Length: 272
Image (cartoon, rainbow, N blue to C red; front, top):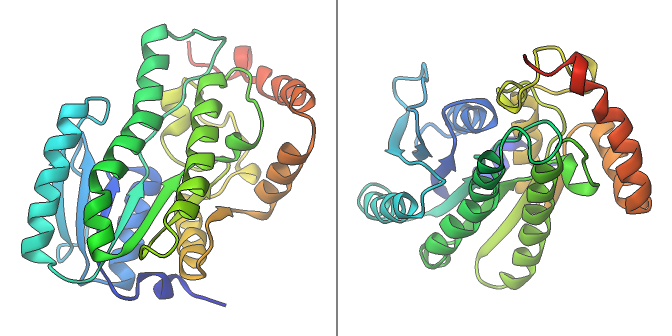
């Protein structure tokens, strides 16, 4: 049985998107606890508020919905790591993403397009831009998907589709990268105690606590899977069950069931 610390052996740097909150912030906090010598690079709009004063964190202000800002940040990160962490493997964590709740195209067509930009295009762009650097150093690409990737998700239609894309993209990329010194891990959490639901337009408490995990629990399971060399992990036993049935049953049936479950949030749980 591997431990979270095993995942970080031989790594010298971690690049994370969206490290200012939620799962991304928990990745920084736990990785620092396990390996305080790591250099961290964060791409997000806001600077992470972290208590650890010794943490080697470099923040790159970046709107991941804008390709030119990704290009600028990627070049700056490569230059910084060549100076401050010239040897050792690199872990890229594609964490940034968001969802919206409602009947498509609610809340607006523009927000649905932005979701595709951040959840899909930015992941592909940043990973592709950094791929030569990662291959030269060795490392891993951890991409946050979701249990929503295993079945259609009415009222979260665009969000679920973006996560289905990154799940299948990550698994396919892992096969392409065999023998290169770089591998991938698709992380599929279920409901997690982050700001996701607030941004999606759902009130606090819309999802019962018993159905969710803390972001720290998700990150610990992710690192164990990374250390074990896995290419996909669904965190939490309840999520494993739902993902299994979501992946095995006919898609029209899972869409119908998911629609019944998710529709109950529409009037009772959406913010006014």
